[in-house]
Amino acid sequence: MSMLRNLPFSGDYPISLRFGDSKELFRQVSFQGLPLLGHPGIDYDLPPRTPVLAVQHGVVLDVRNDPESYGNSVLLSHRWGQTFYAHLSEVRVEKGQQAAAGQTIGLSGDTGTVAQPILHFGLRLIPYSISDGWCGFTDPTPYLARLTQPRGAIIGPHIIGSIRPHLEVLSRWRPRMITLLDPSPDDLLALRDVCPDSTIVARIFVADHEMSERINNDPAEAAQWAHEITQTRMAYGVDYWQVANEVNQDAEGLAKLNEFELARMTLADEAGYRCAILAFSVGNPDLPENDRMALWRQLYPALSYAEDHGHVVAVHQYGMPDLWGPNNAYDWYIYRLEHQVLRRLPFRKLKFAVTEYGIDGLIRGAEPSGWQNFTTPEGYVEQLLKCGRYVERFSGQVLGYSIFTLGHYTPWQSYDIIGKAAAYLADLSEKGTWREIDAQVYDIVPRDTDQSVEVGPTIVAGMIAQGGDQKATPESMLAEPQAGMLAAAVIATAAVSDKDNAAGIEAAAAFEPEATESEVSQPDAAPTDATKPKQRRGKKTPAPPATAEELPADRIED
Image (cartoon, rainbow, N blue to C red):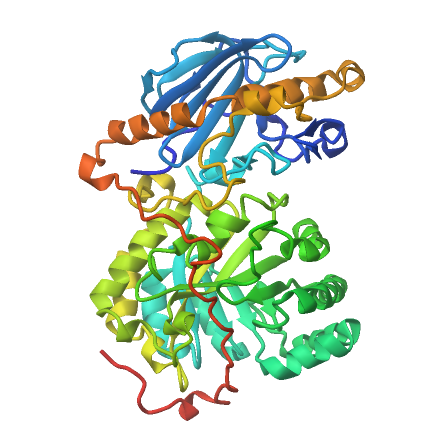
């Protein structure tokens, strides 16, 4: 079952307000003590009484009529999150009702504080936080575009060594993103011939200790040095250039890493190329129990600059002995970005690239041990395809996932997917529009790992009773009606109990033809900081061979 089935209307209508627009206007409104960061949805100029359609089957979680905010509105619950439809002239569904994809749930109008007929459309992904500056909403644009714009397979390769031996399998795979280690210009030209639409991240190898030493000594000088190296490697076909890899990941090093990447992106903008920054190893930076984003906030200047200038953030995510481990603690490892970081970051248009992904025994601090030590090619591919279906819901911000590795040098031979695993992924990975892929997974769900996680909406009524700062001031509401509208509306859309939201998700899942009672399962409890496994150490990567001929002879061939 696809994530979305159709637009929230039939036809082609202009957008009057995009996600993130009117930043200064919306910053006049605070919610839970934080200023709102922009428009939390898309406004379409729909003629009056145009049918408004459910974008996917779901359950009506709430129906509201508030003339001081969004007027008539409908909130739908889906297995993966919620969709919100507002300023309706008429509502044609009731709370608790099941709605089919494409069903008319209302008619467009001008109810609430708008001057002309529009449809406001919003989208939330589970997990979300209503205190993230966006009230949990994310940009619907890439999800709606996917209805007509095909994409490649979200799972792709991280390639070590020559690209040429893999061109045939890559031509069938057509991955959305490919990560390359020290690629040659000739190889890049050949790769672009078979994968013209893939996003390519190229890492320039620098030994960890050298990179860390340069950054700690002088971040700006290190950035100039990295920029000059990149200039000498510049080649056609690369979308993002990475230099630092798994360095300066602790509290002491992050400030200098932030300074380094800021300076490097500035130099890149002047020279006309884009960067992949940070490249954190799995489990890093830490998420302190008393303030989960304390370390990430040290990087906000670099993250903000990257969002505004089109650079991306690279991270690494692994599991062991499978892609849900260790001990099913996947919120801290294989889905750390999706479950713990994205919902807390205020940068909703910032893009991420998971440039290393897969099974890695180093999570337990052992010697390098890849998937070949834990499963078969068929078993590994089955896990990867399942994860790929699940992470499609985060594809609005995550460009792709690169399996480590296709091709290898010592000591990474047990990680190599060359042979059967790569062939299966090339042939079985789903690609295309939402209608052509299966994005439903029923037994991977986020964990409620701390009190600030909203797997469902926070019960706002209780916070208001405690005197929380949920509303705009009367002065700002009078001066800017649209800001006042939002202040009221975010409370309206959030003030649904966790119990009601969970019931709506369960009902939506039951309404899906593919879902059965046995498929909807609850995972084990998430680890606390005291019990969660030790973070994986960063790879101490040896220098790669200079040429393909220098690759070890014991490369795995299936």
